[in-house]
Image (cartoon, rainbow, N blue to C red):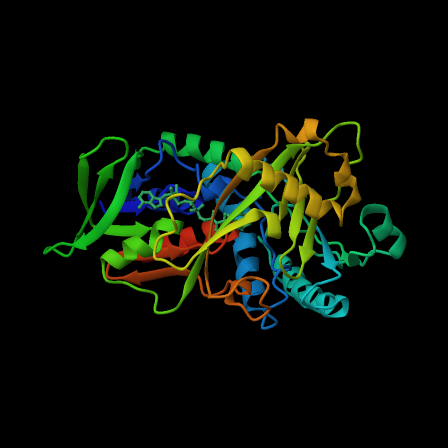
Length: 409
Ligand SMILES: Cc1cc2nc3c(=O)[nH]c(=O)nc-3n(C[C@H](O)[C@H](O)[C@H](O)COP(=O)(O)OP(=O)(O)OC[C@H]3O[C@@H](n4cnc5c(N)ncnc54)[C@H](O)[C@@H]3O)c2cc1C
């Protein structure tokens, strides 16, 4: 039986582990944290992208990539987690064109239309399923009166319906964790930091590292094949095998704020503000609302091979307070309903964040930045070593299948 080391217990690593086990491989799933799925996999808003957000890539390659991932997402999870899996999804996102958008309203409208053509065609293929259900209805442009009812019309210069939804990543993580514990072909090694991968003389691999919290305790383990799904830690471990991407990349540290919506106030719509350094509102069915506002939530950049170890998943003190206030203030200019969030609601807000890994050298405010493209992602393989860049949470289930196709021929 092939013994595969899957490095990284985020969404990508967990999906790969389950897919490999379902094909009869023996998997050892390694992560440095005390539990699986505690980092970027749960520090995001869980939007399953259909491609509408990427107007800066008019080639539609990013949209096509996201769409293929989005349509594989629910079928993969149902196959591994049960056909009756009921993942609660957010209300669908309205796409809101900001007055300072890098693309004008008509340009965004044309892009959304083009993507929607792809979405509707793909969704008509028998078996294609999107989490939120039907996606074929035409995208509707909001009237001025509708815009005024939900947004400040001086800031929101155009609004379009979309069928795009988000899953609650924490709910998904807890189901996945349970499923992995029950899977006899997956052994979990938490608290194991990976430092290096080496090829051995018998054309196998040795993974080495140290035990977290146990100074001086090292570990090593042999594998027939290795999958690197370490996300923020991926490039550093690739490098230990001499693999470098040959192009610049950026690690960015980004946060979001989750808050319980007050029952007495009208709830805001789920909204994605385009195009540029803006933000999102995601409303989940349990009345939790996730807010992100780029100028307040983007807290660090690094072009180094590893992101700084000081980047925290849950910031505290002034940094936390600054993110909460800056996010609500920034978004409330556009979504006046957010003014209902007083200090008493924000005191309990959760701030969570993680690394975004993407190709490129300049930030999102540069319309030509490679950060606006997400098609050069996926699985890279070299003689039994597979390095997987999911690019987005959306892509993890599809890339798990691509990766397993290469591991178990
Ligand atoms: C704020 C934010 C919002 C986002 N929103 C969305 C969204 O709405 N939709 C979407 O599609 N994508 C979104 N993303 C991107 C998405 O979250 C990531 O692409 C995806 O979660 C990354 O894959 P992962 O889950 O496997 O990563 P992770 O959860 O980071 O998994 C990697 C694991 O490897 C571990 N690890 C790393 N290095 C080592 C090492 N050397 N040794 C041992 N363990 C190690 C890490 O601790 C971690 O547990 C967002 C990202 C952020 C930060």
